[in-house]
Image (cartoon, rainbow, N blue to C red; front, side, top):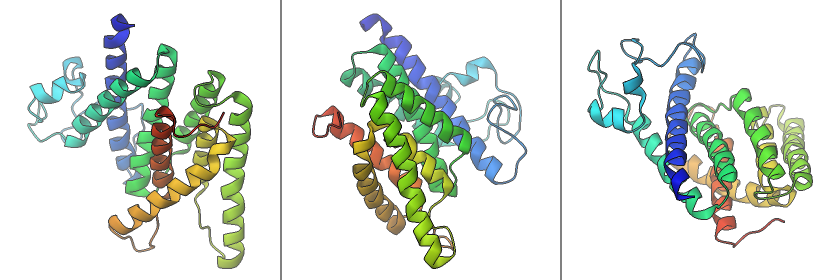
Length: 252
């Protein structure tokens, strides 16, 4: 197992780099730029020049360039560096808790999509459908590997996760004539239900609601008083992961 550690660290760092890039691009997409996650290739957001391979090495390139673009010398957003450090820490944590390499790889991919959704929803109240559906796919894959639940509980978890929020929103809309929960939150809870199993839904909703309340009081208020409920759900899911790993929670 020791010989594979450098590969896992590199994989985690690359996912961190991808997450930082994705968060930045979704922010620019939200602002109206005609770009997507794939195109154009990695470039400086200030001078728009394409980055050379040596400038794309996670953590080390930021340190080597002293946090500035090689071409225009403008500061690189520190969030890239912080995100890569977070992913390195998560990779080390998963290696400590998990013994299966395949499980670690799948969980890193799931964390990557959850992290992007967390930040994007917090900043823009926006849960990209393509990320949500990809997360759902990998959550079902994790159940096929019996990481946190089995495939039967995962499929029921996805169904009830989606249905619970759909029904709550349906009732709310009947009385208030507007949606109270975004469609992206339905899919997100379906993904989390698939990740942890059907019995996890009440816990995810409970912890997610608590985190959402905390976010509401600490986040700068917007004109519509929206709450990034998806971010709350994801923070609740992270807490549940920790509780499962230290064996305080178990759903199968």
